[in-house]
Structures are given as structure tokens and as C-alpha cells.
Image (cartoon, helix red, strand yellow):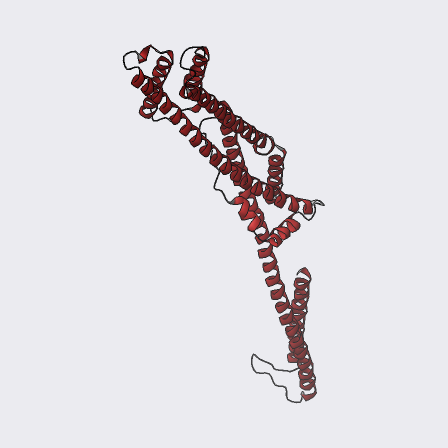
Length: 355
């Protein structure tokens, strides 16, 4: 571009010099005529001078026409180069815009990872503290992971290569971008699938246990009815009847309180405040009349099985919650190495954009 401008200046200079020579030659020819006046020049008997002047001017004008052609070619060449430079500038800006887009996605993704990590941490603590409760957590609906993965890899590759060409590790940077986003995209999907499977398991087990609890208290009512039918006047004097007759109303009162307070019933509360006291008292009554009856032994076995089922579901939930805690510490906490790498990549891109 600079050479073309130089050539154009040289041509303009030569043209100016030639025009100046034409003026000088013309003035010199005019001086050859006596008694000259403005627009009244007599070249009679000056044929040789006029002929030589015409030949010289003709040659000069022909040379000037060549210069004008060269100047036109240089103008065309400059226009072509200008258009090429504009296209290159647009292409460079497009690649820079790709980096800006990546930076925006990075910012949103880092925020989502931290928010998701906070959800994981809260859920893990709550689930370990109350494993039998129906604790839940949500997953962010942000699609930045898939957006970056779905972007044209070649355009991102060119953007990184062009803007970081002085950095010998630019290719590793490109690979790290896709590696981290693939990792989090697949990781969150896997965690969501496992969570849905865990919730499905927990709901099914809670329903089974709830059914067993209802059956247990129905059996308690059945025991009272059997004693009442057989001993209508003194059925309340039997220790087994007294035991379940205290237990059953308290249980239904608890359920009423749950409904009034719009709270779900707690399996752990039922186990600790109804089933465990029942088993403790039942063990004391094993030598009393009534334990030989199948319904009494059935209640003992049923209460014991329900408590075991509750403990098993709690063990499973605590184990799952600890796994979530591990995932949080390794991949979603503020200081985990993957998030640090993501922040480092964003910082490098932002620094390049600010240059």
C-alpha cells in the first residue's frame, strides 16, 4: 500500500514536471515571434519552429497518456488492496467477536457452575442430616455447555490461532476449552440422571415403607378388636392392648398435626417416637400373656422390619449425599482445579481482547 502511494506521488511529480516543461517550451516558442499580443501570435515564416514544437508536444502528451494509464492502474490496484484490507479487517473482527462470545459464555458458565455447586452442597448437607426426608435439588437449565460444544470448532480454532499466534501453547488452549466444557456438560448430565434415579428409588421405597406403617397400625387396631371381642369387659386390662391403644391414637394425632402444618410425615420421627418405643415395651411383655398370639408377634416383626427398612433407605441416601458432596468438592467448589482452569482461560481471552 505504501509503495503504491509512493509510485502515485512519483507519477504526479513527473506529470507536474512535464506540464511545467510544456509551459516553458510554449513560452519559449511564443518569444520567437515579434509584435506578439494576447491571443494574436503570428507564426508566419516559423514553420520549422512550429513543426518542432508540435512534434515535441505530441511526444510529451503521448508520454503523459502513458503516465495517466499507469496512474489508473495504480488506482485500481490500490482499490483492490483496500477491499482486501477491509475483508481482512472484517475477518479479524469476526474472529475477535468469536472470542468475545466465548468470554460471555465462560462468564455465564462459571456463574452456573458455582450456583449448581451451592445447590449440591446444600442438598448434601440436608440429605445427610435428614436422609429419610424427601429432600430435593434443582439443576440449572443453562445451555451454555452445549452452545459452545455446538459452535463451529473450526471457527473457534481459527479465532484462538489468530489471536494467540504468539503464544506457543495456543493449541493446548483450544483443546482445553472443549475438554472442560465436554467434561462439565457430560458430568452434569450424568449427575442429573443419577439424581433422577435416586429420587425414583427413594419415592418407591418410601411408598413401600408407608404402606407397611399403615399395615402395622391397622394390625394394632385389629389386635384391640380381637381382645375386645373375646374379652369385652376387661380387654383394656391386657398389657398388649394397653400398649397399642396408647400408640395408635398418638400416631394418628401426629398425622393430623402434619396435615395442619402442611408438612409431610417423617419416617425417622415415626421410627424413633412410635416404633422404637413399641419394640422396647414389647420386649418387656414377651413373658406376659398374649405374646404367644400370632398377631402380637406379627406386630413385633413388622415394627422391626420397618425400622430396618428406614435405616437401609437412610444409609443409601447418606451414601448418595456423600457422593454429591465429593462431586461438589472436586468439581463445583470455588477452589476446584477445573473451575480455576476455566477462570484462567477466560482471563487470557479477556486480556487479549483488551490489548
